[in-house]
Length: 438
Image (cartoon, rainbow, N blue to C red; front, side, top):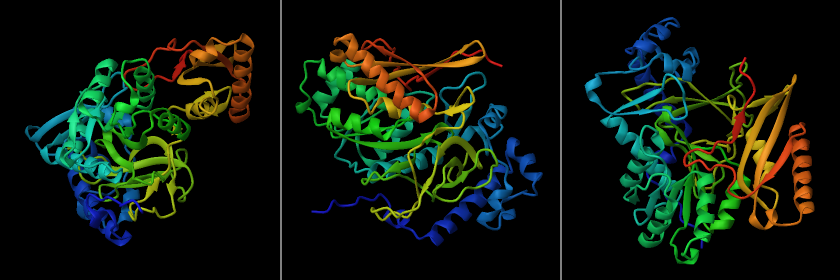
C-alpha cells in the first residue's frame, strides 16, 4: 500500500511556477518597501535607484539589490534593520556561534506566527502529526533552533517536551516514561543518546521513538545512515539559520530526496561565491536567500555561505517548491591547508565509512615551520580500542590512505579511546585551527 503524502497547505505547496513567481514578486515588493524605511537599507538601495517597492517591476530586479552579509548585520547592530516601531517587537534572538558584536534577529507577533507556520508545514512534510510527542533537545534561548521549532510543533498540535540540551539521563527517562515519538537534536547528540541508552537500565525496544529531526551542524549521508541503523529510527534533515528565522527554511519530505525550500516565503539563489554570478541549476554554489514574510526585519539577498545545488528532478511528493541537496560545506569553514581546499564534511565522509570508529572526531590544523599539519583525532569503539595494537595500526592506515586519496593531503591519524574527545551539548566542535592568525 502506497504511503499517503501529507500536506499542511496543499494548494500553496503544489502551486505552479507561475503562481509561485507571482507570490514572490508581491512579497519582494513589500519587503523592499519595508527595507527602504530602515536605517541600514535606505541609502544602500537608493544608490542603485530603488526608493520604494514600486521600483521593483519583476523578479529580475532582484539582481539590482546588493548582497547582505553577516558583517552587514553586525554593522547594523542593534536596530539598524528595524522596520516599524520597536514597541511592536515581541522577541529578539541572536545568531549563535559569533564573537564580538552579535547579529540580532527581531520579530513582531506576525513574524513569530509566520515562522511557526513555516515550521509546522515542514514537520507535516516529514510525516509528523498532532498525535506525536516531540522532545526538543535543542538549546533554548538566544539561539533560534529551540524556540522556533517549539512554536511550530505546537502549531501543528504536537505535544512538546521542552527538555533543551544536556542532562542525558533525564532525557532518556522522559523519552521512555512519556512515550516520546519524535526528537529534535543535533546528529552528534543523537549518537551520544544511543550509547547512553545502551548503558542505561532501559531497553530500546520499550521506547516509542520513531523519528528524529536534526540540524544545526553539517552532517553527511553516511552519518544519517549510522544514526538510523543504531537507533532504528528515521532521520530527517532540517535547514535553517537564525538570520532566516531559524529551522524550517528548507526541509525533507517523507521521500528524503533533498530539502524543499519554501519558495512562497523565501527567494532562493545559488551563486558562484567568487564571481557572485548565478550558477546553472545542478551546479554547486553558495545559497543566497531573501525573506518574503518577515515584517520587523527585512533581509534581502543574504549570503548564507552554505554550499549546495538545486535538484532539478521533480519530487515524488508532488510539491513544486524546488529542492536543494545536502550541504557540502560552507565558504567560511573551508580549510586551506598547504594551498588545498578541504571541507570537514569530506573528512567525515571517510571516517564514517570505516567500521569500528565512533562518530566523534576532531580536526586539528597546526603550523609546523612553513607548512600546515593536519591531524585527525578519531574515537574508536571500546572493542577496537581494547584490541591488538596491530588492529589499531591497520585501521589508522586505512583511514589515512582513504583520506589522502580524497583530499590529496597526508593527515596524521590518531585513534582515541571512547569518550576522550569532549562532547559538545550544542553544535559539535569539529575543527581546532591552531595556526597563527595573519
